[in-house]
Length: 579
Image (cartoon, rainbow, N blue to C red; front, side):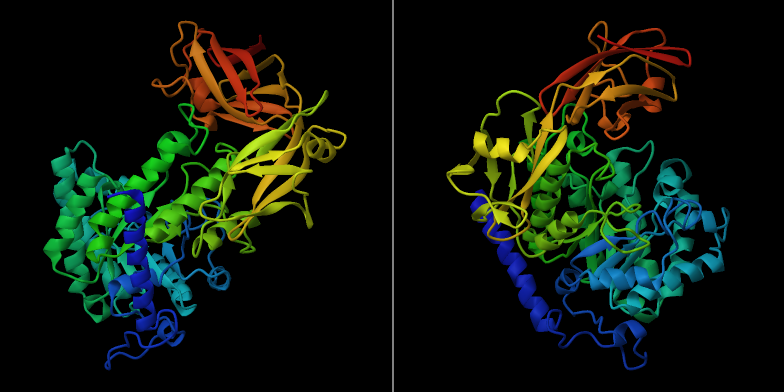
């Protein structure tokens, strides 16, 4: 089947979901599942959050979704990982910004006895329920789970099988009992990113099947609204590899329960997600990893009428850390939301600690990211081959050409603020090749002070405009430095250039750094301080170096410039010299 046919089939399926939503009242507030006659309506149901009969329509109604990450899942307590206490204002803000559901990860073991009967601290259970109720009463769908317990004790099934199962069962018996009378807008997920140490693939399949089926039995037999609540089951590590999806499909089929939801997570092609192995751009390989992975999920579940909740998506690094370049990051987030939508999946962005939303103000950290993600719920946004136009700090300026990625949109002009640039004078467009003239760039550069001289927008017929930063630069320079294995701070004159990645080798050409398989180490090992004029080499990289063995670092910049630098660790002392 070709790409056009696949797209048509998936969009047809999505259109079918929208029809289902409309007919169940998900879009127009009509008929939905009412509370049983013997159970009074909850505050959440009174707020209008009623669950459609069709599970596909119910999960579709949860779009878009957001994770209350690093909060109730933090170890040991809610604020331990830097987030404030969750309040009603948190969910008021989410609801006001168009979110329809929230995933609330919960780690239980710090608040639970380590031995039978594995009692959960009543105060912790009360706090979790309080947070859940605040979200439900705001009319949001909510999902709760067993979160970091997965790698703290559940992963030990191969060596402590019976004890793990006993604790898992006791944990869910207590959760199911505590939440059995909550409305069906509360979903329960068996375990987050299940993983098992020292186990074969066959054993992993067995262990996860045991956990998922036991969870299903416990919740269904606990009474109240749990008898037909939507239950969420993950694949191994919530991975989209076909054999893990097939295993989950087999488990779900064996349960003969229409109110089940499959869940996977997605954090992009690993080299791009952490900028390692020269993975600086959202290239064809990264895009293929996304499209093929989502297609497998669609064909295994959605095509067969089983709803899918993309319970987490993002990057394996903070989105504004500079590890992944801004424009390449935006291309990824635009694409992942589009692919989720066309494959009929509800998507929940992972927000760890003010990565997207400031928890104190409920304002987005970067408004354009808000606009991009929100726009993706209904359409695509156009992008381009780059978001930076680098101009030399001196000498003549030449015309520059970028390639537009229209993503189905029409070109609607090039703008600076509220002023459109003039076609044929400031720019030309031939097909997807947008060329800014030398005259326009010279005017925009002004006095060519290092850094951003002007900000432009490529506007499309729909979606979010694509920003272009006109930057003046000169070749960057570094100086000698001395530090410790905790950090080496290198004085750096960036001169308007932006660092892309770093290659590190020993004298024999082998890789230097934590990753032995690539000479391009994760960019998270380095921190360019553009305001402070420093480059910090971090402890994880320095401590991995061979004692007394000189290392050559090649700092690569988006301007095409490189700076060669030499580092040697001798015990706890680190010296750096420029070539």
